[in-house]
Length: 414
Image (cartoon, rainbow, N blue to C red; front, side):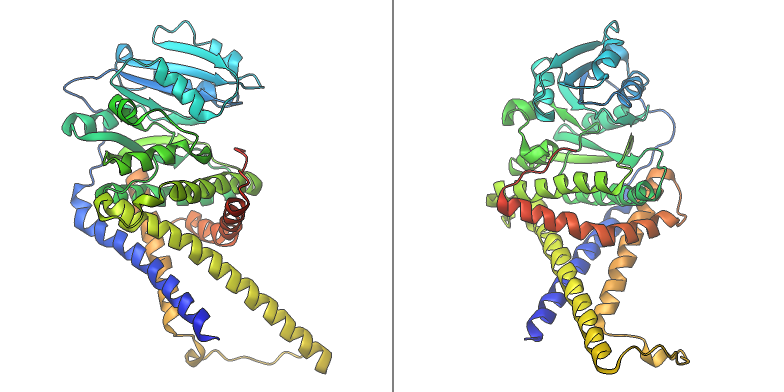
């Protein structure tokens, strides 16, 4: 009976290592293609772009978001901004109204229907060949849009370009842990781009050719992850998605464990249910690495984290039970014996090596993601925060997402 759990354990560990090594090999094969530009960018032709800012109770952040769009290094007559209040109950609408006199800005107010309905209202009022959105809690770097548009200029087959999302002004341990995570996300997103397997076109400033929506239809609810659903739909229809690693947007992240938990629960629930919705593409060669590698890797990750957490809980309960038996048998033994460290007692079993290798590969991803984001190779305490915080918290939102999926309980947006 012990053999089966051990086999499952080693298989999951091996697959986790395989995924990280696959990313590393992809990096070494394509590292010379990673370009990080400094200074201002110029285009041969400036296409007209519509950017929608969907807002719901964002009075504390939306003003800076809009100002960041107006500060973009892009001709203002080529930039159309649509501000959409999706039934906010705070002062968001009053802030949006301050911008109604700008010639390239239009404002809208509607009943609350969810982010995807606000985006679709923007699509309805968009007349440009390129369309995107910027979350109302996010700031766009002045060079972000023009660098994204340079990808469309050099390759007419590209249907969408996603930016690098990094954490804005982290103030506590939870946010600094996310800063390291987002640095790793920059690295991972670039590797997915090389593999043609990007599975999320994030709300912060992903730009699409309008043809995507003309051909595939508007945004869908997508289990409260409409940015993931449209990426799945594009992959299913062989639409090319690229990552512009030096186009930066700065997002405000959850500052408490509860807020982080709710956000990640929504994300993982969205992944599970979008994958179920698009299960017909899973392991189909014609859909490339998205189908053969990324989706299976995501499924394995959920299974691995859930299984390993369950194994940890079982081991902990068993340890406590044995100590309880010992106490009932011989009572408390508070004597302390001297201990001499001996290398002989170091656990050198293969799984320890594999776990250590996983951590090394994750750290490499964080370090290189930081290199692309900040131009620094230096290690930081944020990596330690990330490894500690996410190691202990991630299993809870993974397990809850599985539980909610089984019972068909949709998590709240916030």
